[in-house]
Figure 1 (cartoon, helix red, strand yellow):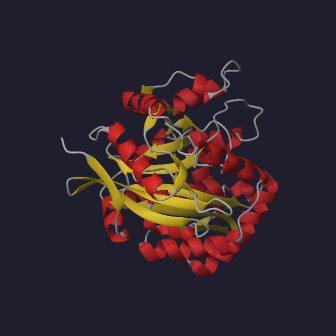
Figure 2: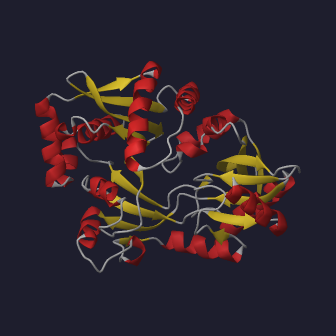
Amino acid sequence: MTSIGVRTIAAANHLAFLEERADASFLQTPAWGHVKSEWRSESIGWFRDDRLVGAALVLYRKLPQIRRFFAYLPEGPTLDWCEEDTAEVLRALRRHAQNRGAFAVRMGPLVATRRWSAQTVKAAMADPWQRRLDDLSADVSSDRGWDLQSLLRTEGWRPLTRAGFTEGQPRYVFQLPLDGRSEADLLASMNQQWRRNIKKAAKAGVKVTEGDFSDLAAFHTLYVETAARDGFTPRPLQYFQHMFAVLRGEDRDRIRLYLAWHTDTLIAATTWVRVGRHVWYSYGASSTAHRDVRGSNAIQWRMIQDALSIGATVYDMRGITETLDSEDPHIGLLQFKVGTGGEAVEYVGEWDLPINRVLYRAFDAYMRRR
């Protein structure tokens, strides 16, 4: 078999490769490189002979005062980890990054290691002896994921087990499989509270509409309210305006804004992102007012319906907490997502490859002081 090489590719070729796959993240689209404008971005491809077999968006952050870079592949690269020689893929990436002046590389391939059904997670949350997903027997375990983790260690990569340079992407997510399913089937798989809340919202007259750029300010007002209530730092309105414009510039249906209304009051708002047949719920906001009419359930159900209508195979609700502890402040979010009847998924996680260990440690210290 011929060896694999890595080189820069055009954004159009990168995008075409992603659209043909079911496992490509929106964080790996060329447009995402423009969203993250504080980083320099590059589209790269893995080639066997002249055939493109893998692609990635690489973000580069410069080390202060010297021309060396931290290279980051968020939820990438995208390639067939079963078909290709994984060690060869990793070594080609290292060579390319080193030639670009990178002192370290971080990546987080969307390769699953374990999956737990909603029923399994729900039962564990009710058991005081079950405290973490990591300790819970999985319903499905993937040899491919375990083999990749083992090889990464062999090749000198380190698992990211703490917040270092950035908070990174979630290792645990919650997904709702859609392939071959109907609305009736999806409703039947939800728990009784979810079905009741969807009916309650409809009976109360909650209306869910699709917004546009001009509605982002209203979304952001609700988002800031949510941030204050839930204790996180909100992004500025300009970030969402920039993200919306850039992603829609790449594909008119890359991102959508949904708004839930009750008696002319905005009570919930969300963003929906799509690459090929994978749809993500990315940002959400809700008001403390009118909570009894269940706008959050109504808006999620509309996004699930729309994902199903465009032929999506996965509705991805993004990150969940690893903890199953009923006292954890994030447990409510997990309970909400589990109610859809989907599954918790563990990925191999994010991994760092220190190329220059001295600069790697210095950059880590710098980012911690910021």
